[in-house]
Amino acid sequence: MNTQIKTTGDRLIDALFYTLLTLIGLATLFPMYYVVIMSITPLKETIRNGGFVLFPSEVTFSAYRAIFESPRLPQSLKITTLITVVGTFLNLVFTLLLAYPLSRKQMPGRKLCLFLIVFTMVFSGGLIPNYLVVKEFGLLDSIWALIVPSLIVTFNLLIAKTFFENMSIEIQEAAKIDGCNDLQTLFWVVLPLSKAIIATIGLFYAVSHWNEFFAGIMFITNEKLYPLQVILRDMLQQPNMSVEMMSQVQGLEAELPPFSIRMAMVVATTLPILFVYPFVQKYFTKGVMLGAIKG
Image 1 (tube, one colour):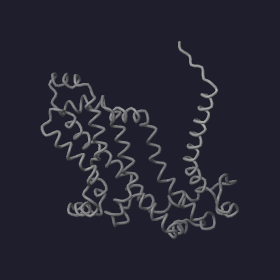
Image 2 (tube, helix red, strand yellow):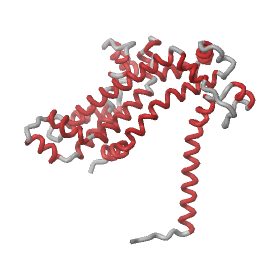
Image 3 (cartoon, helix red, strand yellow):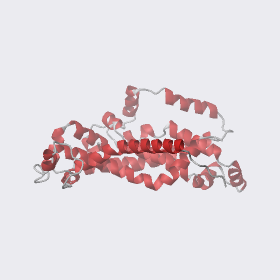
Image 4 (cartoon, one colour):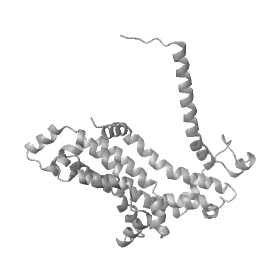
């Protein structure tokens, strides 16, 4: 067994490396920590510390009570959850149905299709044409305006295509010998072996839908259909909105500052999607590597 003896210089480099990584990690985590702390810090504590608190002596969850008792957050949360679930499902269906035939080298017109698809990564139609297309299809002021225009993302499509190309062709040929057609081969053989790539691009799509912001501003004018991120934007830009939320819950005006409401909103919109990652983490790295590297 080969053993490597580290010199003093090696240990010094390791120490510097781990110190640097620790500092980067702390710099990344501190803003998240500060947002959470400020969302649970009462008004008197904030005033006593000049608006900057790292370790509050007492905490309050009144800010979360205010945002969840306000009618706007539950409604926007339902809309965003619906968009995320339905949108991610449709994204996966359309992406996989297109990626699989494009991975077959015998497909007629394959190179032309790939060229036209990749072309959209470099040149897009633009803001106004996108709006006009959505308008002509009658999708304005509907959740479909936030789903249909992004049914297939080229980057995710290429990852899935490369994954299918690397899959053993012998398994697929064996399925055809057993009498499976292309669709049966896809659904009964290929997809059960593609959990890693499905979880990977599914996570990409879910995060994209959950964080949908610009499309909500551009295509939605009905406030009842606003996604969560649009409500968050309004709250951060309009301080009066935080005061309005506090006034709807008796006694909160004197208990916490409007700033805490905004920080609680940030936490509430971030945590749900963070809880999804641990369930797909074991597939994530494998899926990205297998889908991005052809060999």
